Length: 127
Image 1 (cartoon, rainbow, N blue to C red):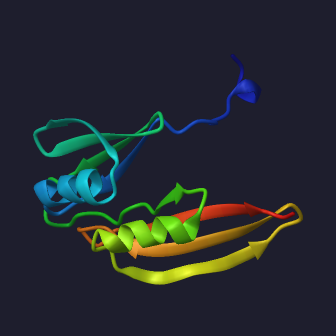
Image 2 (cartoon, rainbow, N blue to C red):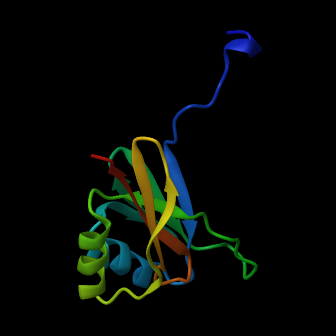
């Protein structure tokens, strides 16, 4: 393959730093309902529809900023209500972010048990 053919086009795993691995496992597995795969020392793995999410404890006290995970949901109001029912506090209610030609993009933001930013996103088709 020459350099002109190469391109990154698929995410296989996302790493999210956590301070308390047990607490983070409980949040992602029990509160968000993400499918738990396995745990090894200092790391836990979940399945996001074929993309692996790795929660990991930093090896030193510096830590590192986390990525924002945007969970695609068909009905953002329904997803927000379900998560609120599980104790999730939202930093931003569902908000219309962009009006596209064929759909509207809605997002709502919240934090995980470790303070990492997460979001719900919904693309609502126009009639």
